[in-house]
Image 1 (tube, one colour):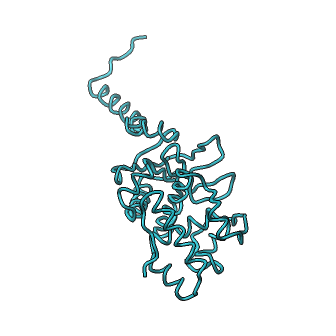
Image 2 (image 1 turned 135 degrees about the vertical axis):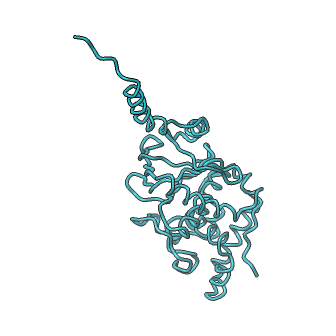
Image 3 (image 1 turned 60 degrees about the vertical axis):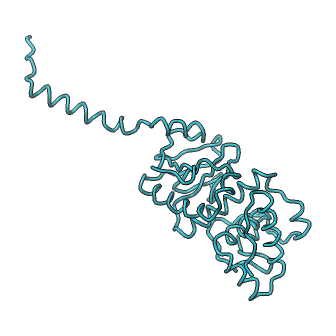
Length: 258
């Protein structure tokens, strides 16, 4: 049986159809920068948001990922969602001097549509060896900016000695529940019992410090006002302790304003 030779017009239509079929594959290919970022962060398929903030690159995943041998889950995000979240995180980082950010050696922030650890919702994951923060980027702007500074403080502690601080324990003792609530949410300033900036800070000593750090960076006058109104000398001493620690570690001044 003789096969008819396709006309030039039909050949053009077939070529166009083939090209359209290949477009999604082309769009799925990572750029060289994304491939390098995926290797650096150990997030396969990582996408990068356009631009960076003082040397920090922002990435996201388009499908659910399980880094760290499946202990954590990073939810998928769309590019527009990731770009909006990156803008908020960048605003949070803008509260820190260049020298402090350089000493923290943060290179990547991976934004997720929710982060969980063995099924429990968490705010993020500091990964000091990879110069990386993994953040839940799915919340409102105020919560995300606070979360950025909170998790960055955890990175600071992992970078400079770990999350245990015997001097803090010696000065401020216990009073912690030593358990997490079922769902991670931003706790308002003043929601904690005496000696604590927030109720979330009552969970563990390292969370207490991270909560107070975030509030001292973002709203130092509000913290000072809380101390004055309540006469909370324990909270004042905690703020002074944290200010001295951050000054020594990364040259950051977060002293309570007069």
